[in-house]
Length: 159
DNA sequence: GCAGTGATCATA
DNA sequence: ATGATCACTGCC
Image 1 (cartoon, rainbow, N blue to C red):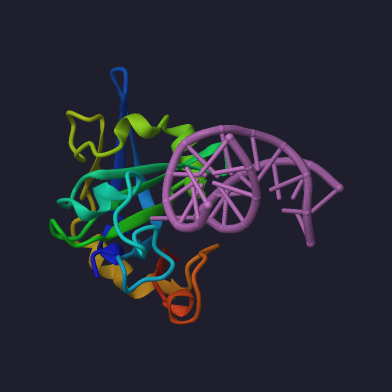
Image 2: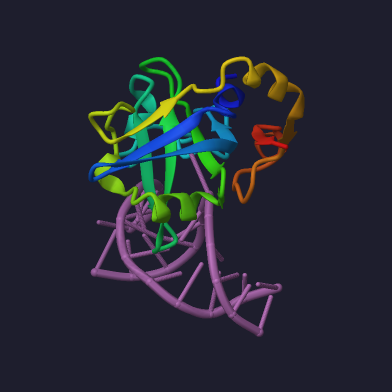
C-alpha cells in the first residue's frame, strides 16, 4: 500500500514566493467500490471523479460547511483510490492542514508538482527505513460505511 | 457529547 | 426542489 510510504515525506506548499515544507505524520487510505467507507464506494460522481483518474493529482473536497480535506490520488487510471493526509508535523487534523496551507477546491484535480504550488518531496533518505518500525496502523477516523470497511487498519501514524 | 455549517447526492 | 448525509473542529 502506497499510504505508509508517504509517512516521513514532506508536503511542500508554495504561497507567493514562500515555501513551507512539513513532514507527513498521519495518513489514511481509501479505495473504490470494495471500500464502503470511501467516497468512491458508489461509483463516480462529479465530486469524486478525480479519484478514478491517473495518480499524483490532488483530490480536495469541502466538508461540514467549513473545512477542506486534502487527498492525493494513488491508483492507476481507471481504478479509484486516494490517500487522505490527516496530519503533518505541527498540524494535526485534515481540516486544519488545509486552513493553514490555504488549500481549497482550486487545487482539485491539479497535479502534485511545483507548477501547482503543492507537492510532495522525499527528503528522508535512509531515515524513512528506520521510521518503518514506528508506524502504527489503526482504524480510520470518523468514516461511515459498515462492517469490514470500518475495521480496516488503513490509518497510518508516525509515532 | 454535540452544534455549526453548506456542498453534495439520491430521490422525485 | 427537498432532505439526509458528511473522510471535521472546537467548545462543553
